[in-house]
Image 1: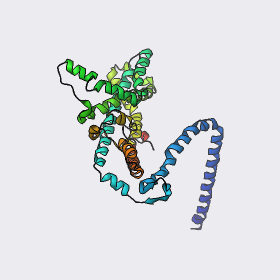
Image 2: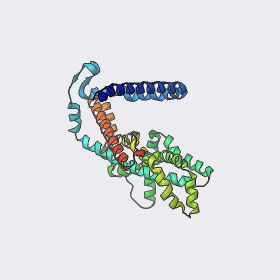
Image 3: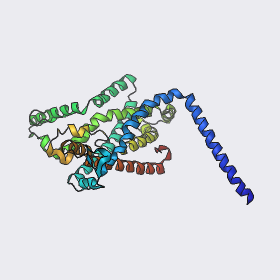
Image 4: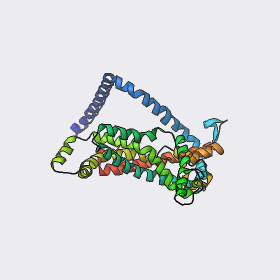
Length: 329
């Protein structure tokens, strides 16, 4: 027993020694690779300033915020801001719209982007692939303000291109900005046209990293292009797909997977379309602009963040159970 007792302090000393050596080695590695850490610094500062420091402002969600009294001087009201939101008629509407659009966009975006990436890889010509990539990426660099005017030129009730085609073929024109049901399809379609090119290029880069030995062996065995895509490309692409899905799930409670400009600009603030186009982000922005209720807006923003974090943790846990190498942590 005395031997066991004497072994405990020795183990503790060994643990402290190992920890000290680990810290020394870590500092040596930092000094050796200081240019890389210097390159990391701007991005790290950006994340700290714009992502972590604003988290202290979440306390506003539990206060009756008064700009004169400031954040700490305002009165504590507990969960009343949350109660005000969840008891309103808009809570269910904007929550459902946010989840509906993001799930539809996430599923379609992943499927279409992977399909386009495989097709681009099979063009067989670097020149054609480069041209196709440029054409697909072009909409990504256009702002949603420009997209608003393009959509309005297509859907203008009087002189829009779509209604002109309908009239030419003998159909009645549709007042698109007064019919909410159509926007269940217009919003995902517009978002996919703008974003799918960028996402597909990411998957093209991942496919490029797959060893050509797999495809050469498959060709020797007489595999067709469809079989190579089914049994080689898609399985080896799945870890990247899982990571992209996990990163996107954190934004599933944000309008348009974090890009809510589409939901604010494309419907042109038409109140009659709010039933199908209003998401949490646009609701918060509108309430902050018109009602100027900072406390309630902060409460809804905190609600978004917490739910997004929970979704990422649950999804990462499920992916880790399926394939530990494809999880984020």
